[in-house]
Image (cartoon, rainbow, N blue to C red):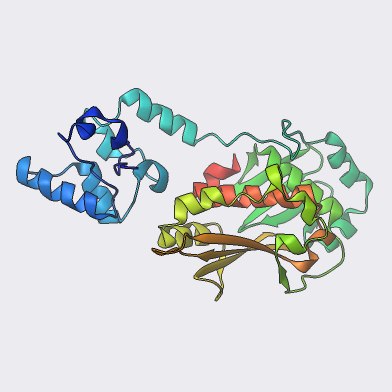
Length: 308
């Protein structure tokens, strides 16, 4: 497919079909460099979008650049309209639809909050490696951030510039409650296992397969981008695969992302591994949801935008 760095698909343009205009190519291939040289020769200067993508080694701006849509798009009359760019800005602040493993809309049962109140909160915190802050709530680490679960108000907060801000993310709220209620006394085993080695391996098929394709699409040709995103959300680099990181989604639930970059013969691949103790703390549906949540953070990049 002949797609330009700006995101326009030249395969569906009549000018390209007629041979009047060639594709600009992406910001990392030879087509882009050839187009830049031709624009400089014919027009006196290259397209600023293409030039920026080449300089920053970005393949496709709408997919790969955290600054999209930037001033290079908004300062000129093309390639996109103001309405389209405003739509991109608005919808990039939205979160993907939140659904349960059954495909229904995600709901956080109020009973989960009540169950925490009824139980020994001190024991809950000990098992989950959380911090009890009676009578208001519980401090819990998620990735690199400290969450506060307000037991009285039934809501979640995180700290922004020294102030606690409410989080509107039902999936994160649900998973935090499920982890607190189910975390066992078992410690991390330090033994990594694949999804096929889980007791509930049968669950992770069909619609419940671990969602790796979007990460491969985004980072398959951008290893540095994956490293930046992983470290931005608190990943610890490991000496495994071509690129690998450990993420402490919750204190007793590390996730391991192992990336093998592709070449001319093989496509890039990504494996997500777990500590053998994971099923002592989470059920299959919660493991599935947690992987989706962390992967979503990796795709989005900006931690604060993923919280809400």
